[in-house]
Amino acid sequence: MRSPVTSARLSGRRYTRRTFQSLANPEYRRFWFSLIFLMAGINMQMLARGQLAWELTGDVFLVALVSSGFAPPILLFSLFGGTLADRWNRRRMIQYSQLVVSLVAGIVGVTIVTGVVNIWILFGAALTQGFCWSFMMPARQAIIPQLVGEREITNAIALNASGMALMTLSGPGLGGLAYSAFGPATTYFVMAALMFVAFVLMTTVKVEGVPVERRRRENMFSSIWDGLKYSYGNPTIFVLLLLTLATTMTSQSFRQLMPAQVDLIFGGGPTQLGILMSMIGVGALLGSLFMAGLSENMKRGVVLLVASGLSAVAILVSTYVTVFLIAIFAMLVLGIGDSGRRALNSGLLLEQADAEHRGRVMGIYMLNFGLRPIGAIPLGILAERTSIQLAFAVAGILLAVSVIATWVFAPFIRRL
Image (cartoon, rainbow, N blue to C red):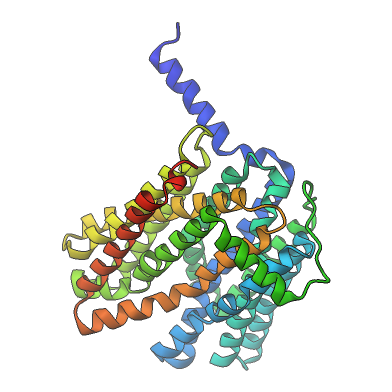
């Protein structure tokens, strides 16, 4: 008979193996490391681009414009990207998009060295990279079943999320160190090199499994409409997409206004904001790793709703607390909830969609990345006219209502 300690060790080993099982697949492993290098460059760039924009203009509005420049192309072109992911070679879509993203970063570096860089070059770079993102990410999500098979989709998606969380946590810090030590030009060249490594790694990935459905003769807009009808006609996919939208417009928009929260509620500044954002990153890493280790027997739909509910509770707790330590804990919980929900939602969408429509479903899902800055606008208006606390309370309540409504009126989600 095993002792409790031995049983715990065996259970822990099984959980660890289950958590990282997709990385045992060599093709997925190269795919995952490609993501790591890409996200390292992207997250370094988020800091470097904003800092350089500030140094060039000293204008807060222009800094915000450049920082959110990626969003409009994602909003406009993700449906096209998803449609092409159902028609074209997904690996090549990812590969060439990553190459363009790398070249754009390198070109910005050259403009810095030559002294011709200006705010509109940075804005154009953000637009171009957002355009590439709208084609790359639906393909990057839709290709996963071809790499790992149907049974490991959720695990692979969660490991993707953990890699992104790790780079979100460390990338800006690395970017800040590089910017301070070597200046903006070298930082951009480093980012370009990291993204180029991502491109090279992607060329080595061999894609197996179900081939992409090729429907080149169908009109592009008809294909997009078919994807929209398919998503609306599948109750599970439709509800999962609605839940994603609710989270984007509340939890993600909440993050956009955190600088105001830190100043008005805690009387803090960049240091306190950095601590809170870092705790969201730590929570995101923990949440995604937890989701990666979920067994097939667990009710993933229930876990999804609980994770979304955690985000709502975290927002509501952080709304009225004046103790910074409690806010730190709330942001940790927010990161766990958001990342867990995102990883499970993506995995469940891929599982529920048939192979022919996966690209288009993920294209619709990607629209949420473009909606993030837009969702902050109504919250910002409400905060300006009333108070930041009321705006955040409304966000938390709306998310909680969305979760409860899904639990009550869409019981099939709980059975997933």
